[in-house]
Image (cartoon, rainbow, N blue to C red; front, top):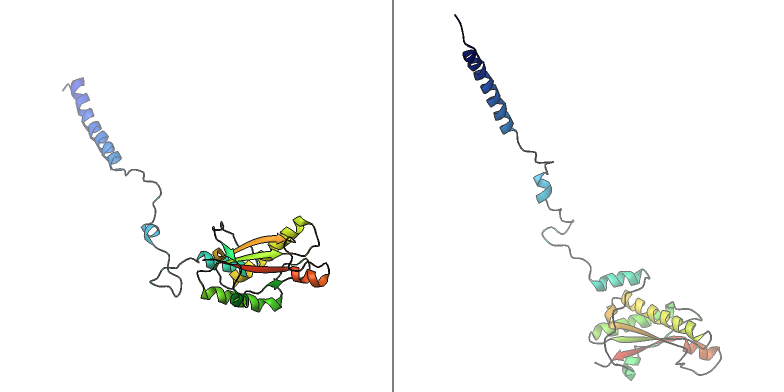
Length: 206
């Protein structure tokens, strides 16, 4: 029996069509490449609260607390722009608390004998939250004007830093240096010089 070429070709083409269809369906079922998967727990898990703070937020230190920590470490405290204030001499009563702080020659550190004075000043400020202080740094006549201005600044800043360490807001404490320009005693010996190496206080008029 003779089979035509056309019939043979049709018979062979049927299985080939099924094979191609099966291959296409397998390719269609291949999932798209999504890239690396991220665990859902990483996206939703929150850090556990610190011990003792369950159910409450952990607040960051205030700027005053941060300044106090810097002061206790003996570091400089940032100075904000001074407000437009008028500073005046303390009243005779307030001067009993706002006493001068005196320094050794060429030094700006707070001597132990004046630490109780500054503690009293901190207490005075705590009782008068509306008041601000101007701390004036002064020097004796020895040394150049430039050097004494810098030394007076270190002295006023040292007093400010000590008061901040006692918990006073740095925004209430302002400094200025007069160097040797405003001596408390016009003399030229050690007795006069020791009275001129000082920090004085002025209070805001408000």
